[in-house]
Length: 163
Image (cartoon, rainbow, N blue to C red; front, side, top):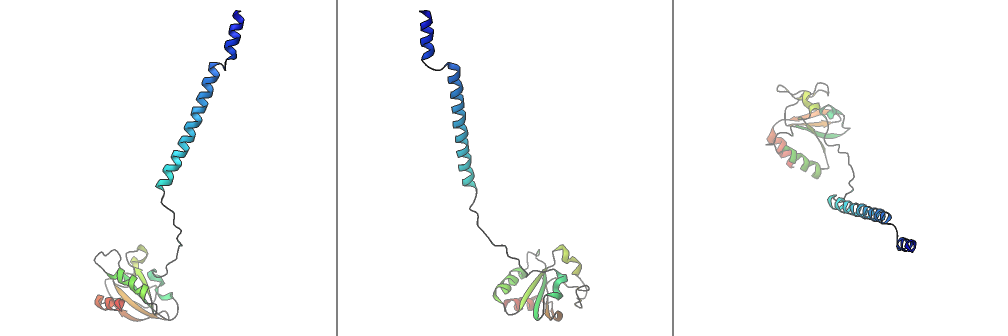
């Protein structure tokens, strides 16, 4: 009779070791699934909506050495220092470039390291690109790649850009 009792106890269900293993596996799966959903929820909150923007190449700011080869016809090139926080030239240039489509205005930022060799404290030289020397806030008028007018007075440049 003793044998029947063991047989009946074993028939009731799975051995306790198997039950424990199954419970551990189920709990681990539930935790992993929970962590997955929690992670995706957190990451989707933090990422801002991606906006598709077209990359446009701007041709209005050039290097000083490129001043003489901006095409045929009439155009202006202004040389200025964008790091000068007291200057309003930067905003005037932007305004002119947005509002005036008749005559093209190119800008040369003299604070750019590539343009440093074109700065002078002496006389302005506008013969060609290799000998070009300008002062801060200089406006040159080009016609067919040759300089036809030079303006260094800040008031004249400001009134030109406001027109």
